[in-house]
Length: 120
Image (cartoon, rainbow, N blue to C red; front, side, top):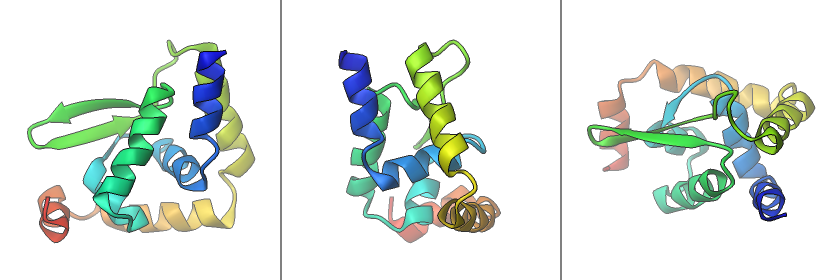
């Protein structure tokens, strides 16, 4: 029951769902996620924390950057199902397409440049 409640809480916010959708394309640095959505770093951190707590995303640190990605196929069934359901339901929305288009531009920018802009 606890796992289910954590997943449903994580999916109850549209911004967290948008984060899940963009991570479907691959691993992203926190600064790239912050740049994409234009939220305060503390807001992004809170969203990522909730998603991480629900096991919907994984993290790794490399030098000064923290990267997030979707879990592998070994993740619990409920997690895999929730991610797949989210993607199947929302990946073709206008909002998801706009996020993907903006992310494409962000991925062409060096992380150090993005980080300087955000003063991280």
